[in-house]
Length: 283
Ligand code: GUN
Image (tube, rainbow, N blue to C red; front, side, top):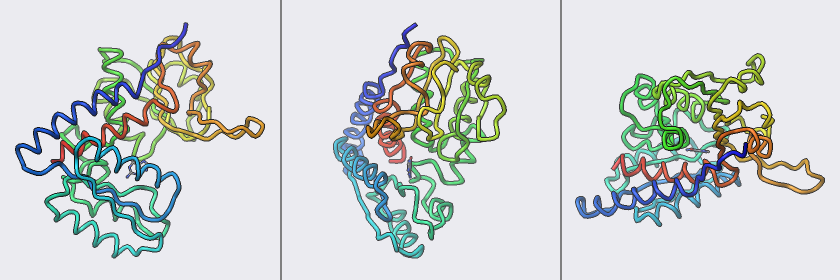
């Protein structure tokens, strides 16, 4: 078996095209474009790349981008004052504070200072509560794209077994909630899970977001499974050569699974497209 490649870029382009149509209509109706404010505190290299590409993609989609950089030493008060200003700014419909924050800042306090209607990350406790109780909410961007892709590829999802390899508030938990909403039987894996190979072997859908290079050998997958590999890791074990890999070993997965995303070019582009879609929803 050779697994079909689930093309993240093509899927992201479709979402982005739909977003662009909405942006055009909203501009006509409101007289202003939807606006997304992105806040970066400090100089974490990966965060700087995400920050820049979010700003660039926002502008490309016809929306207004408000980019705010604060020094790594910025105080909690500085950051909360900025968020308060953005909450009250009618040109700003979505606010995203790039994580991780420097250690002296309290992530939860900062995220919960964002107005829930402008919380395009879906991390505010009000949105978490709504999602957990199956109500309409802002949904975190990475989990939002995955069931869309699965529905398009598989059609009926009801009753399938899914394993989510991550229990973070930003990816694993919301992903599990969404899959549960689609009537998957969901197992959330973590560092204490017993017999992980067996859990993976049973799963029709594997969603991996543990951030460890090729932690899952392709041979663990059930034949015909669908694999969604969320994380991008640098693997430097190749004798001086560095390459980008996912959490799941790609070559073995290609031979055994029914379909798989790639790293890079899989979930990453969809995440940004969903951020733009969330901004339109917020607007
Ligand atoms: N850092 C890595 N991914 C994300 C994300 O989805 N949202 C925010 N705010 N920070 C991140």
